[in-house]
Length: 158
Image 1 (cartoon, helix red, strand yellow):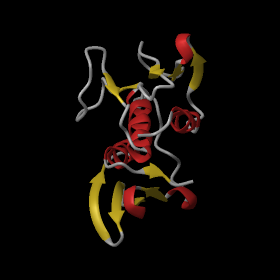
Image 2 (cartoon, rainbow, N blue to C red; image 1 turned 180 degrees about the horizontal axis):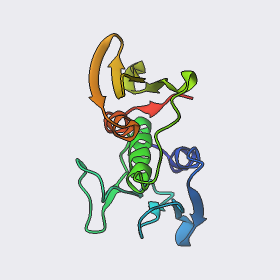
Image 3 (tube, helix red, strand yellow; image 1 turned 45 degrees about the vertical axis):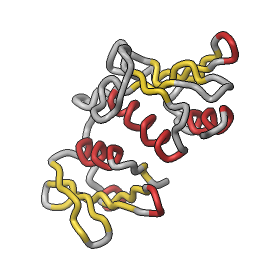
Image 4 (cartoon, rainbow, N blue to C red; image 1 turned 180 degrees about the vertical axis):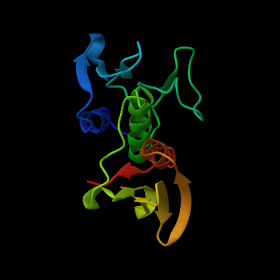
C-alpha cells in the first residue's frame, strides 16, 4: 500500500489537476477542464491511506454509486494509470484535434509495467500500436490509440 505522501506525489505529477485541501487532512484533486459536470478526479485522499478516484465513465472498475474507486490498496503504476484514464474520460475528445502529423509526432513511446513499452505511430492514415516489432492494434484516431495504451496500463514517455 502506498503512503499518503506517495499518493499525493502521484496526483501532483499530473499538472492538469488542481489540489484542494479539505477537512480532516483530506485532499481532493480536480480537473477544471472537464467537459462534464464531474470535476473531481481524486476525492478525499486521507492520511490513513484511504481515497477515491473517479472512474464513473470507465469500464472494468468496481465503483460506488457516485462512480468512485477506492484506491487504498493500489500500487503506484495502477494508480497512475487509473488517474490518467480518469482525466481522459473527462476530456472532450470531440473538440480535440489529432496531433499534427510531423516527423516528431509520428512515433510516440508509452511505458508500462515490468519495463514494457509500446510505440504509437501514424502510418497510412491509421494509428498503429506496436509492442516491439509486433502489431498490437490499429486505430482510426490518435485518441483511440491513446485510450488503448492507458487501458493497458501504459503512460506516455517523457
